[in-house]
Image (tube, rainbow, N blue to C red; front, side, top):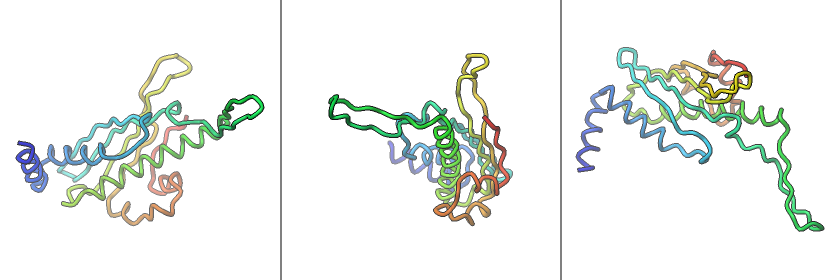
Length: 176
């Protein structure tokens, strides 16, 4: 039964069926390994008219990013002490993680596209976080980019600064 379903998905995917491409991309992104504290939630929409995949991706909030810097054992008290990152360093780590997740997601989609169905990706990074002025959890798109496969594949991801890469690709970032 499972093999029949896989064969059917493969056939529909090869024929560039929109739903099959979305399901295939969902499988690709669900295979990504992230820490348990990171959300792994996204919505995909494939548009065959322009070969574009729209990704609305729930990113980790700053609270999901660990801020533990160092743990020391104090022999005289026989206990461990913890020291956290400064607020500035924690924000910088969060900022870097957001760009890295976005670039990784785009890379995984383009790399997995063996039938060349996707010519561009529109990535919207959404964070669910407490609005400190209202005290309510809000969903806000904090980062967005549309990139062509051809342009993205020219990037040497092992040698880039993620934030600078985004800026060069003409992204939209909402500060704070």
